[in-house]
Image 1 (cartoon, rainbow, N blue to C red):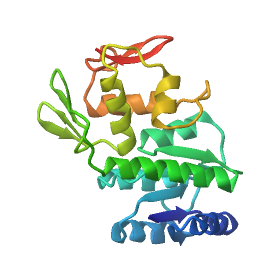
Image 2 (image 1 turned 135 degrees about the vertical axis):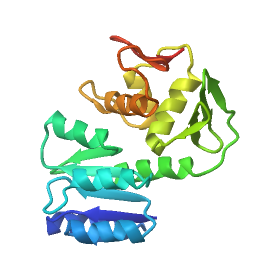
Image 3 (image 1 turned 120 degrees about the vertical axis):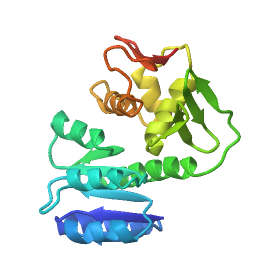
Image 4 (image 1 turned 90 degrees about the vertical axis):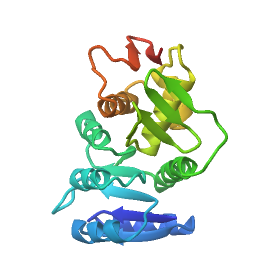
Length: 226
């Protein structure tokens, strides 16, 4: 598995590299955004760890570039800030996860493993049945989503969120349940991750946020697809 690390704090980048290499990942480590971008364009990556506050093109810009190029590998953002706005901004641009400095390297490794498992599962075939909902088609074996026969570009994480809601059609799924089933982590009440990913999926489905056709918000409870 190929993992990219971008952080201009050399001690952090070097530490993360050691821990990931101990888990037998191939690590591409960079201290500048220019070198990282060159690697992204040349190497088939399985995950990227991007520092937000870096000179040149910052982590937000690189995250956006990766998603604009239709690369679907997971992205973990590193941030020295704890404000929700920074976290929401990264997730809105297509990041899968974020971790705040200072962090426990073992926690970061666990996040990396979780994201790569999801990405690997996304690229594997399975025997699950397709789901059809009023013009929306979720091909679970091929991990594709079609809206009126046109493919919708979803990240593996977005696909898993939509597929879980669709498989629970007619039932309300709480943010806690959705997070723990898809992210495989304990849910915290102040976590905006689910909300941001639901917003991104709605945008890609061109769903009216005030009167959504597919993913409906049940205020104070969760989300459902009818």
